[in-house]
Length: 326
Ligand SMILES: [Zn+2]
Image (cartoon, rainbow, N blue to C red):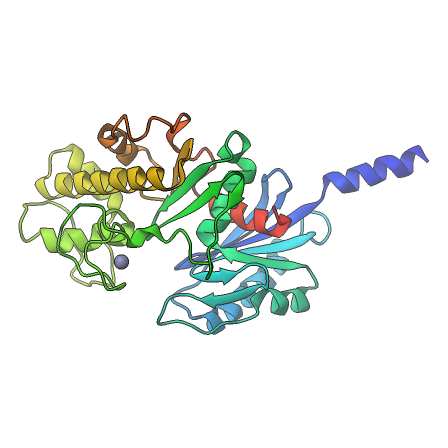
């Protein structure tokens, strides 16, 4: 009897979830326990894809993962996927990557059938917000905004403990708002100078190309426009007083500070959490804090902070949170 019980307990401790974080160019697959500890993972190159080819990429990579990495214990209890674009998490439908790539597919059902593991999906930033809600600042806050500043910019709003999704699962696409920094760049969304064009990874690249005509720089700007400038190089040169890089950093910090102050006025959070490759090293964060107006952020009592979750794995943890359905 005693033996049986301890066996049962051990089994319970070994319950795991599978997460898949599909970014713009890579797919990260990993298994974690219900506290968000990553037990095993493997990274795959995805290349440019549409929704149909993404399904093939996921299947091929997951088959490889099962064969070469394998389960920690037994089959995970659930599988969660973070995807770019619009996702209906209730019906498991991946609606759209962007307006040019719209082929709705019942991804959750397809993968559940193939792997015989319950599968759930969500948008990547909404998934990261779930990770923050369950494993991060959500433990001390019921009203926070998670802002992801990576290749693009988007936010997850948690209000009174609930995540905002909107009428078409499109809430939080705050990258397409103007923030008072005027460069003169046309955005694909139809407007000018969206914050994403100034302070995201792709924004730094576009601004560098445009403003390099006006400011001297030692920054390497690839002639091939498919190849991006390195934002870490911009930060390093900016510290040495490089004229172009100093302007790029100042514009990005001002744009993000204005975005944060605008959003604080919208949902009255007590915490603003920043994540993503552009802010995770803390360099831009210090400059953003200098530009925040004390009155505007007076109720943000926990501060404007960088996520404490590992920036390399927050997307994967988010996918795991989707698998756990939290
Ligand atoms: Zn836009």
